[in-house]
Length: 278
Image 1 (spheres, helix red, strand yellow):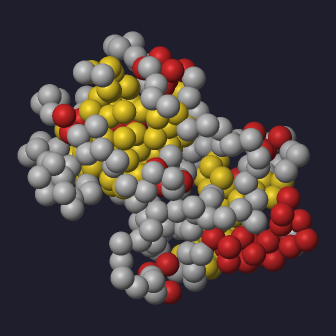
Image 2 (cartoon, helix red, strand yellow):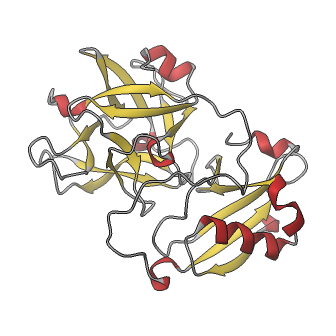
């Protein structure tokens, strides 16, 4: 269902952004956990973005944060893009380490020609690429030049009524690589903690472990053994926290390919913590 601007800001909890110039292509969190891309795989979790209200927005519609499948936030970075207009920068996924959030992580949906342009707090507009070179999947942010590649349809994603658990099927974006990642490509340090009874995460409770796979099922089982909750694993949800100011996000897909450390939080069903990120 496509949405009005006010609904996008005030009513939606989860959305998809579809490029109007490249029908069937959606903004997606790429499998490296750092970049964003265009994907034709509409039904995967990578193409769904959680909407978080943010302060600001005096000039036009309110601002929001857009949080992806790996718990990280969409940003118009300061890195020069290799595609698109010469003044464009990379759109990426970042952790949230400060409050208030950086301007590049704040977004407004502004109606235009039956769709929307999505403008960042630093004045750049989300832009698809590949109008002529259709294999290009990059998404950038650039100054407004009226291009149709900056126009998006916003689709509301219904809220899931059941809690995620270990038995759920994994619906994730297929890798474009020919072979599975090697152990050296996915080995990383994991920090993990339990949610306290009041729904908070105590900074003194973090523990670390080494993981040599990006497979979600193996991660769930390994972490359950480390925490001594193997018998209760079906009554817990594994969440990722991207930065000390990031909201908890249920981890529903394999870990991103790479060696970057990740913070994980175990939430027990029936506790205040289950309200976070759901």
